[in-house]
Length: 366
Image (cartoon, rainbow, N blue to C red; front, side, top):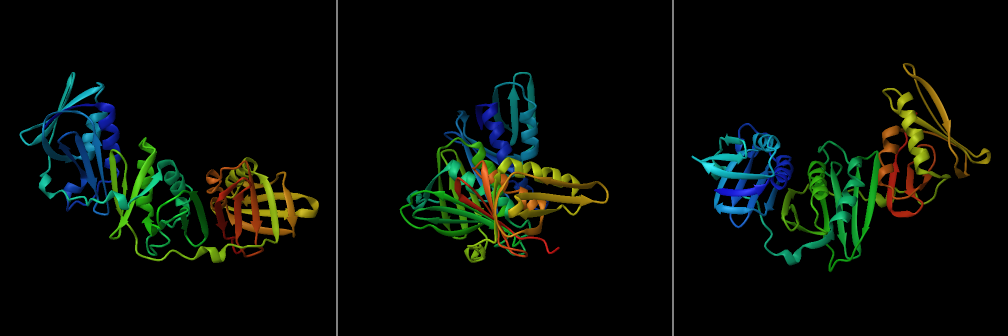
């Protein structure tokens, strides 16, 4: 193998691939990236549950293939100041050269590297705007459970229909749903992408420039294809909750407020809430009062009010601050509407001018 390549392109590709590598000591090949030079340079990585292949244009002098530890390779590339790098094999190992620097990295037998599956029939994939898929995942993934004890709660739900895509996630205490408008030739069904892999997919989508990507779902596997990147992930078994049934249709109290005012109120409440991270919301429509309170024996207490248009009944209700604050960045609207189902019932948050996003949070029992 011998290729001449730009440092920026290979370094960014190796950093992305390094996230997908495995950590099993019994399988050292999983901690490696596989470099394969043919018409261009291909970089592959896998942890057996997810895999990635990135193709990079370069000058190929000799074809070849080699596997090296991802962390050592990325650290080596970071230390090089030159724009162009020469990568070649020397005695079965990887030689990285640039002006004033020469590094030999011991290779791992590449025959053990797992084969990444491939979708040959690209026509069966769903063409989706990259930005839309990225926004859909980022708008809901924080609401998923960090545990996979119940796979349906530890995953991001993606449903592709003819008229668009829906992304949703819930940990049973809160729920986030993002609707993405689109037009597809046919329904694509429903899949559950484990939270970890959804995060990896989001990371990749942020760092590629393609306008559109293609999603394939087959054989318990999700594949995302772009011009230069292919990401493969297993999907989780399970059935996502029928969450539409738990979203209240009517509210006893409603408040319309500025999103930034609410965010600042919660930021201050977080400081004074101590380890519990509880915040009390107090709404009195007739007196036009919207107040948040928080207290901690170690820090003190606060009570702040903001301007709000309020209707309905008086209500005093407590929430975990994170369950309210996490959704704010996902709302593309300057003003938000808070709909309270009542004491012990869910709160629904939506943007005044953003009907694509719905968030539900359950109150605390105190």
